[in-house]
Amino acid sequence: MAGVCVPWGAEACRLLFPIRRELPVSFALPKSSSMIVNDNLSALLEILPRDLRHRLLNNPRRNQLVEVIMDLGRPPEARYLGERGGQYLRNIEVSIEELEDAQELVGEFGADNRAGIEGTLHRISAIRNRKGFIVGLTCRVGRAVSGNIDMLYDLLHYGKSILFVGRPGVGKTTVLREMARVLSDEFQKRVVIIDTSNEIGGDGDIPHSAIGGARRMQVPKPSLQHKVMIEAVENHMPQVIIVDEIGTEAEALACRSIAERGVMLIGTAHGEQLQNIIKNPTLSDLIGGIETVTLGDEEARARRSRKSILERKAPPTFYFLIEIRERDYWIAHQTEKSVDMLLRGRNPMVEVRKRDEEFKVVIERWKSYDGQGI
Image (tube, rainbow, N blue to C red; front, side, top):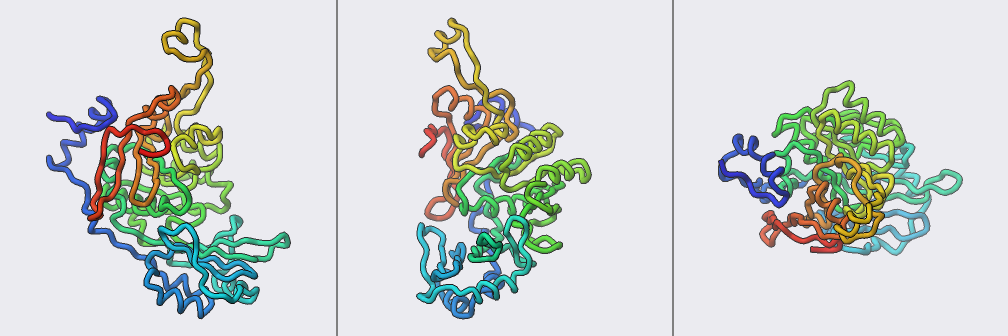
């Protein structure tokens, strides 16, 4: 039987053989044209002053609204997708009364200074002064985007763990939400989401319909995320665990423990590129960990390298690592091979996944990766 050619060698091709038997011969990604966006924007605008609400609702770019910033003593600001700066919504400064009114409508903020609007995916984050009073709000639009994981739909058939990295606001959480729905509803997996700030499943005890049949475990405090991750595996028999913002050593160790039990992990981590994870001593365990090895004279000469080199010390927790450079421009690594190549000072071969002018997914294989661009 013919194998499926992938840029990651014979091992990856062998992995696809049993999957290939279950898929049609002409396997294709889902059509990008089926993407559906649901943002329930009016619910978020209800907490804003009336003049801002009216201005934003009548803005032709409201579907690209990312967040609204309200800082005491400054004009309110709207930030839109694709723009580096923001746009002032009025010349009048935000008053303490407007912040108090918004806080009353939102309700109680958690220990991480985040709150949500029940039944939606929106997030409101607070800035407090030294006395604990709120002096600023970031009102972030949460969108359920159905069909947005066609960029990596083929990788889900591997059943391997996937780690996403990318700068804030690039859409990592949105991808996790849609992956939860697809893996639970289409792949019929038992999926459990570890939802530390209720960003994935939305605020309230009933999770948002955007996660499909996936189950959601809320976390009392951000510092307890690693314990809830282990609890999910021990108590609820998941086949897939989804976790957002892996950022501590305890969480990295929990990820390794879960992966060693045969559970598929889908997660995001702080960092923009693979090199950021390699250089981060707290998170480097996610990609196998880094250690210094001293070579003998003959080995150093054979490798044409220094006697002290960096090497990966264990198999990576995540088989694939995806850099989300832009919402429609991703770089896919097979983690083990890319890390080894980078530690040897070489450019690994990666896949570039992007959308063309017609919004169709284009996969470019065997691209040399230098860490900055392709």
